Image (cartoon, rainbow, N blue to C red; front, side):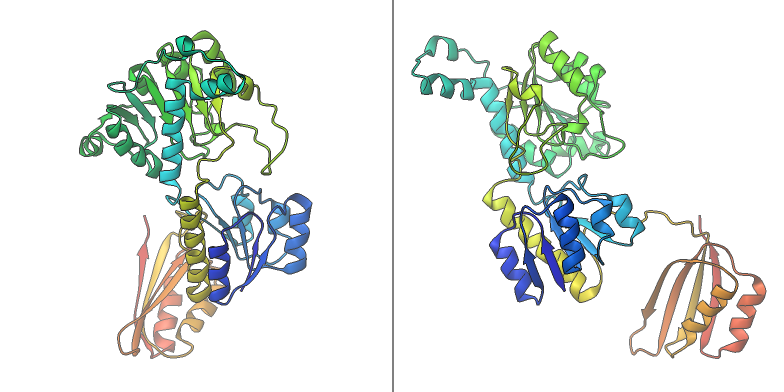
Length: 401
């Protein structure tokens, strides 16, 4: 199996891929037209990326079977095009959770104690204890979480360590689950904003969450609140955030932005990066040695599982629901040609198979096949299968809800 790695990737991961019999092509920094040509020239089975965008042109350039995002989010991959080409897309969720939570708290502390401004002042040869000794302190302040997934959960023990009570909203968070976690459930981001001194965002980016934090949310924040985003810039209405910084005196810590440079270096013109009330980092939330080693190991596990079994862990683009209306269940003796005859009959009837599995019983004498169908086969077809093949033990047709 040939693996093309188009971003920086840990040596331990490259060595592990080679150890399981993969041909590894390591070409960090390959992107845009150069990556299209690389896929076309080398015909890899697997493409591994981090921040590099994966476009329709790349997906159709060769014979890719799998794209692995060596990280959690996969919004830089054209998942719709991958699905049309029958290419699996997988990611490494949860492996950078601790690293991102650590950076979120670094930004909270930096805002409260104005650490960057202290450093700049000292480096310019100025001592100003009078100005920088004014800080609110964190103990007893309320931390609001928008999103309580893997990273949001990692925020909780750190919040307890700093004495911060937590209120939270997440699409999957219930009052019962919040009680189990020792936090308070709120029914909307705006409710969290109204109660929190500090708000930290930990949502995945998708069609439901894009722009979810807009003017209504920022108007609900307390004047002078701290706002932290280490998730995705596109979750936030940028103009509403900028207005809130001016009008509500927000102090903001950002690791992500709506328009980030595609590569590791480059010019950056987002005005938020120049705002004195914003402390910004360079989308480095997952960039610790610990996180990158964990992500590399998970990437290797995904590729090895695919290589050895054909299954893809963490796949993100399989259909949750197909157009299937009926399931044909075939109990049969494990003999050649039984399922081939069934499939030939379905083809002749122009009935499309949506999903299919064939499970073998112990001893390999009998099996049961479950075939999800787009339409119900006519009754006469079932009777013809029963009478024509003595290896069929039982046929049944189930309507799917």
